[in-house]
Amino acid sequence: MMRALAALSLTAALVAGLRLPGNKPAIQKIEGSNVPTRSNLQFRKAGLSGREWCNVNTELSNQRQGREELLKKLPEQAWKFTKDVAFASDGHKRSIKKAYFINLDSQRGRLASIQDQYKLHGGGIPLERFRAYQAEEIGAIVAKNKTEFTDKIGGYPVNQYNKQTQWSAVAVYYSHARLLKKIYEEDPEGEDIYMIMEDDCIITEDWKNHLYGMMDKKKLPQEWDLLRMAYWGQVRDGDCSTDQVYEMRVANDDSSYNGNLIYAVRPKSIPAILASLRDHPIGHIDGLLVSRHNGKGKGMHAYATAQVHAWMGGGEGTTNNAR
Image (cartoon, rainbow, N blue to C red; front, side):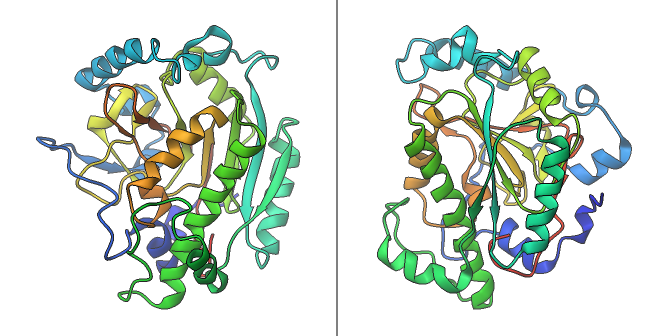
């Protein structure tokens, strides 16, 4: 199967990688940071393992460990640290409950592709299609629901890009946000994992074993609210929290961790995820779904796998609407 990130079209790059003009930057500066970036494409070509190319930032790791001790004492966070929630991968407790993929009505080829892949590599996990919103319809939807996900009105539409591209970004935002809302409404006390995929993702044979292995070896911090497993943006070395994950911290660039090809959430974390959108205008959703917390329990904790595209991938690019 084709995994060529270079095949991303200009339109897809605009839709998924740039913030909307007129918005506050989705990524804000980390004071005193000067961390290099390396593209995941370079990583994949080099064939390096996570331990070799994700060097743990000791200060960041220590901060996280101290924060987790605090979170364990908070009622709204303590559930993450119980034994059967954190690292049980025996298939009986707190496993992957369901997978969704976001798909436009017009993308029948992608619909068939992801269904075929999932038959081979889905591992028996239920799969459901979520209809993506189209650029042509999203303006009217936003007009009727201006404060559904944000209290910061404005920032859309924009004039720097053509109307198709500007409203495509808003359509992607609503597709992801409303799917998250749906998952929470249907399973508000859920502690199992839900997978969210875009329809141009690539699912490999051992993806579930890799995810469970990461959790069993405690390479995924227990505080996690969102884990991005396939994306096409760059990474920042200084964000390496364990040798297998980066914390997607806000910083002074808009190209890191771009793309929501495949990510995992748990329903109990979704209120924190949606709350993190409230303080920011509608924009590119991948730039907004990053770690935003005060270090004392309030906010969301978002991570990205270090082995980008090693066990999941995609991102072929599109000239259509909501990917």
